[in-house]
Length: 151
Image (cartoon, rainbow, N blue to C red; front, side, top):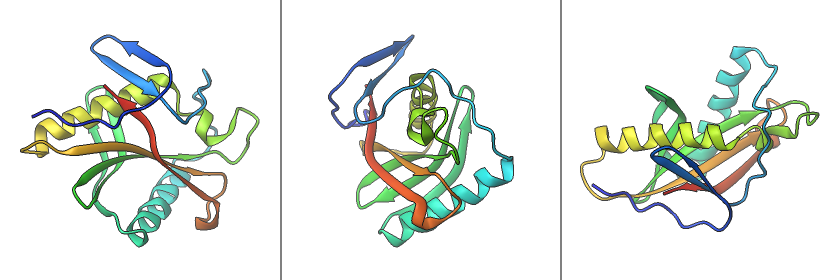
């Protein structure tokens, strides 16, 4: 099984066996957030409902494996979409997009590969999207399709 990762333009970050290509996200070395865990659950729920209203089917939430996690796994037609949901109420550290570092992208890609090996029995198109929130409101959602790629 070999997933067809979306092509991206940008800088490649290589971490051992995984390499992640940056495309539309700005990277920050600061991956800290100051929010209660409950806010993350609420943000993921808002993101799931938002994506469902836009035609995606949520098939897994908080998929974890050793070394990685994907907040939402969705299907859009024949494409598996691995979604990272980020909430940052303050832009003092760069906002939600800046919190998705290359290390975080590598962990998401690792979990995506594990998911594909465990669940997808054939070749499948894949992409990585991000849902960014600066408040716990659906009006505050920014959806970035093909936010980054893994190779």
